[in-house]
Amino acid sequence: VREKTVFGDPLEAIWKHCIFGLCGVATFYRRMFSVVVTSSERQRNQWVDETRKDIDVYFAKKSASDS
Image (cartoon, rainbow, N blue to C red; front, side, top):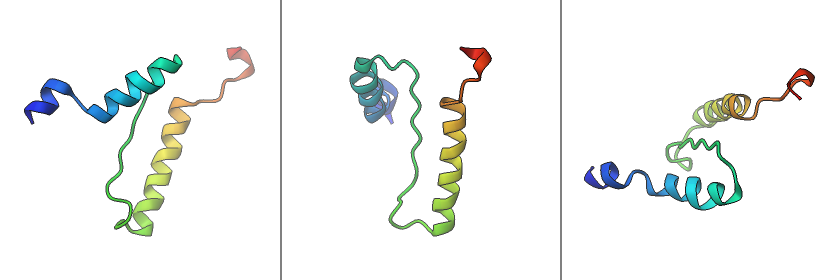
């Protein structure tokens, strides 16, 4: 618990600062799912639906008036 408080999430930090940050990507969002190999088909379908919603939020299509 102390390490998480002091250092945060190391994997998130790597993606945010060392990968996307170095590529100039300022907006970053990471979602984690539980163990996929033991998940049910129903659970995986729910994850796909959640991912679609995330895509709609973070990669919303711009309208012609947004250009």
